[in-house]
View 1 (cartoon, rainbow, N blue to C red):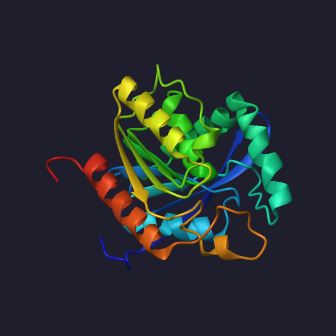
View 2 (view 1 turned 90 degrees about the vertical axis):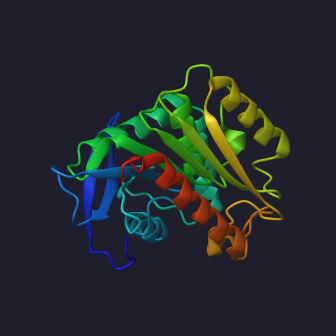
Length: 252
């Protein structure tokens, strides 16, 4: 699909356990209830659903997908300091039922949109969002594939004995990411193999955590975080290929 394909965008409000969330639907204008498109459940990084993630949603939509950007923090909360991020992530990891409940609520809001083909959905996320996509697949989320881009593998539970219908997983990670160590990568790959899930790990030499985000190089960022333009492009290329292979009908 052309990079100048006209897109439709709208906010979509939904709730979970009394918290209002404001997701964003971005899709080619050609999508309709008569001809819905494969969908991407896009999950933001620790900084929330802001301008950067909106631009990412548009980029996926330009590939021909109906994209639903989730609002896991709720109320479009967008942290601006590290001191705000830790408690938000901690509140999810310490209460996985709430964390996955918010993911399920986003999925339900997504499949209710006429542009989305509910039978052809993949979850994709960055940093915390990558962890969210993988956890959603692990815990029974109705997605055919999951993509974790510089996901915090340290946030994941290890039990893949009863995953959902997920068929394939793509992990794009850096060799110097302290939140995705070699031991953590090995454990995840072994768990996926044991669960019968087809997986691919793309490991980028020297890349650190959050390598797709130029803001990772701003002053005050913690050690082990850094932007890497080449790794970012390679991850995008792998993601586009993975999605085309997973969601494009054989007859297309």
